[in-house]
Image (cartoon, rainbow, N blue to C red; front, top):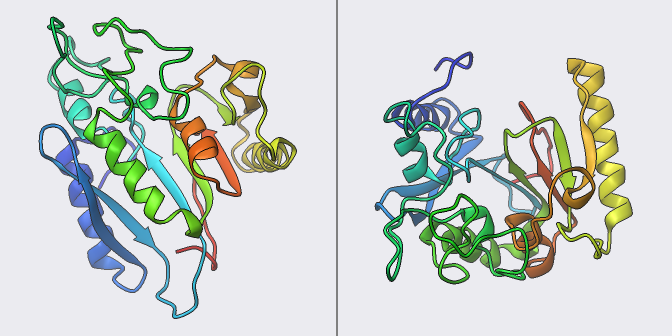
Length: 250
């Protein structure tokens, strides 16, 4: 597997199998849903087996198809479509067909979660990139992650959703007038991460809520994790690379 180039879906799938095969005591896989085009959505579970309950850190990647730098893709249909040729390279959404009279394809999965669905930062025009779908959780991918995390919410310590937009660490909420109950704690964690990244890689990151440093995304996955399922720390990161190491993580 070549970490210095972008990789196709087949190469990423082979890498996931390789990680599990070469590290059987630490890595296992699980299918937790299917995409619209019937591809299995799989996760890698990293951690030593234990009889003692442990907290988990959840990380998802690739909810936007064109963000090729990420791995463990959620939006596989869109990712594969973005590889067809130069005309599809910047495809962002899922690949489900439009409803009603809409002839366009895809929903912005990041705006399809049910926490304050359809309020701000979206479009109801189905051909636009920020179309939030005909209804909350209309997309199989969004529904799969919602149901899986809902079943395991008591185990979650931290939620990380990885994008490749820029050098940012975003904390909830994506609303200009509402802050997360543990905003100060999240900012403390985010600022510590910024300091660590700069000391190791020399890269400068910004940290804050999306209205402060980016845009207002009220019903995106960042809000879903904070408003719909409570976890200790929810961070929306747009890191170039992120490595997590913990003896107390599943």
